[in-house]
Length: 599
Ligand SMILES: [Zn+2]
Ligand SMILES: [Zn+2]
Image (cartoon, rainbow, N blue to C red; front, side):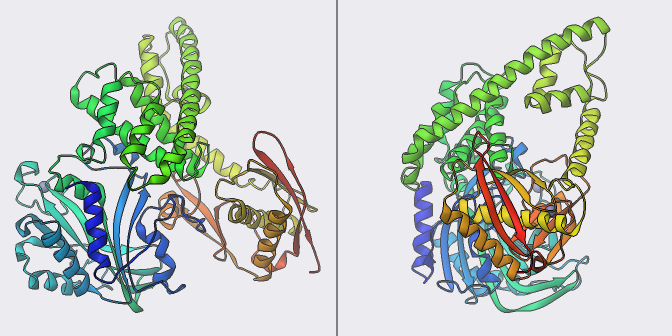
């Protein structure tokens, strides 16, 4: 079954059961500064579940392009990890609940996709001694049994596997997931092997229901929600892998044209065939993701979405080098053609996408060349001194030339330089130190010279300005610098053209509305992991960051990692006026703003 056929069947099935088909949103969620990327179909629906907005219908269905980069290092190494993927989703918002959702899932899988019940297993929330406040979801287990699933195939799991929550507080509930049994030959052969096992035997193919029935109001308070909702999701690539009887998502029709083309263009093998295949898969994933990201308006940069795109492209270039493939822009057309039927807008962007890839790849290769030259020079010195390569030195090359650590080590080895025994620990240490320094620098992010009340007010205003700029001009806007005195703020940011009068007054209006609303300014200390979970805007992908950071929230208007200090409420600021706006070269703009007291 072709992937687009699976998608069509899914949509038709739910539409014919009174679900409203809703359109996709961009990979960069609009109006949600708390999220870097659209990571699931439900991102667009959050406000419905929270009861903040009324949904267009109480049953919904869609297909959503998504991006997740937490496992970026695993991409290509196993059968199923991807950065970009398409998610099939269906929802009930205060309509049917567990029984309805499970019956729909069963019906679709067994009669429309023709899965044989012997190959299907499910998991449900069986309670968890660490979370005694939430009862086991026995109801779901019973419903699966009643519709005819073998009770051996119904597996109870704990909080980590089968309980869903979006943050420390908010709607949450148990989930039930469907697994496809690929057969014993894929398994670990342990007696305990069942869904939830780490081996490759049981593949999760459908989150058949997250049952939102509780509102978590504090650490251990779970209160019933005013209405129950269901959120379901299935990865199109995984369904295709199973239905097309392939051993990996990269062998499905969603990838084959692309991996074939990469194979054709590659000029060298990479020792072992399996290694080469991993590199090909990695390139295929990263290029497909890059095509979709650029089409959604992301450009490579050192911040946020742009930083992730840059990382994807650089990782792809690195892999391409190892199989003798240059010029990744040659792969763009293959993606565009393969996705033509579902994403026709890609075709109109093909030239732009190629151009951006070409520029980024060229820039990276130049950096590699400069870095290699420097490595050769340094190697000469080292040889005379007889010193091994240290982790600090590797770090220098990652920072100055943007080279991946592996490449630095490899190049030095080529020059017959010995690597220090503790090189990886030293590298980690250097990264940590750098990060601590950035964190103390972060405190002066606003350029605060002193902590007088006016300075603090101006600094707090920069948060409002940053978000108001993004809301008005788009999410490509990023702060690049700022300077504050007790009389004015100066704010530098990325934007390609001069602001219009209308834009300026809109920005002022948005900011003054937030000031009038007298929003509370609050912060929480979080680890990067926690901040990531809550979706705050920052460099999440920097996996070496450790320890606590501060995430500042201004009402629901702005969320930013910052060191402070800030006003307690926005009402104390006065009226905000943009006094000047000008270019400071290379796509950067500068705004001067003042706060008029006595509003
Ligand atoms: Zn196993
Ligand atoms: Zn701040």
